[in-house]
Amino acid sequence: MERTYAMIKPDGVQRNLVGEIVRRIEAKGYKIVAMKMLQLTKEMAEEHYREHVGKPFYPGLVSYITSGPVIAMVLEGKNVVKGMRTLMGATNPADALPGTIRGDFGLDVGRNVIHGADSVESAAREMAIYFKPEELLSYSKAVEGWLYE
Ligand code: DAT
Ligand code: MG
Image (cartoon, rainbow, N blue to C red; front, side, top):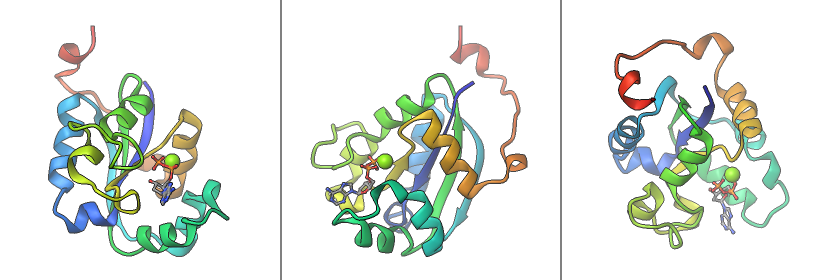
């Protein structure tokens, strides 16, 4: 089963949106296989956002993502990488549709509430920044027969 890395950003935590966001993820049917709260170091942020080094928004991005606690998660489910991107909505909340997390809860591209990996490869790279392999749990849930045919 596919896995992705997702993270509720410092604004999501500060705005008391953790429960609402986790509720949406669980209601969709994705399984939480790892979750913790932490505050990113500058080094972790630089590794996480290494594809954006040199872009004009990069310094602000690193200072935002390290500005407070985040909720780091590994999620599992059918096509979860693409599905989480859909649940999150467009990068800029101004373009994100109502019904998506960014569309419902964000205004500014620099405060877009949630991160989600953009490919299976990015997901694997990102989850390794935050979790040891043994922290990713494999378990079954009774509801699976009602989520998957
Ligand atoms: P996403 O988070 O949807 O994967 P991304 O990887 O292109 O988007 O960019 C990472 C983050 O950087 C994004 O969540 C918000 C910020 N960002 C992206 N483009 C930006 C821009 N043009 N101005 C300001 N911040 C931007
Ligand atoms: Mg990205």
